[in-house]
Amino acid sequence: MMDYDIFEGVLSRRPAYSRADRVADLLKEEVANMLLFEIKDPRVQGLVTVVSVKVTKDLRHADFFVSITGGDQEEKEAMKGLSKASGFIRRSLGRRIRMRRVPELHFKLDETFKEQERLERLFRKIHEEE
Image (tube, rainbow, N blue to C red; front, side, top):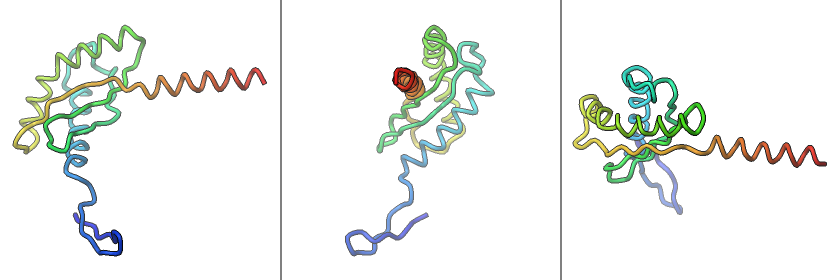
């Protein structure tokens, strides 16, 4: 779908979303479903949530930012499980998605929730001192 925008006084036609964004959305949905229903590794099952996906413009690499329920040990084990399952996930994506080449999958821990909790603790501490 194309949108029309006025850019510097000229009517231009550009895609509403880039192809990389559309592929990222599709990959996020498919991988999230796989993690819920197909991956049988107990280190991963039920503990991992896909927060966001970034795909390079050439569609060769996809970075999956995941949130993991549990402590530091569970995070380490879940990341090991994800790296071990990445080949299975990529092959499954190749059968499901019509793409010339399925991107290489990279799983990264999303630290935003931890950082948010840390900041909230700091704000509470500051507020209590007042």
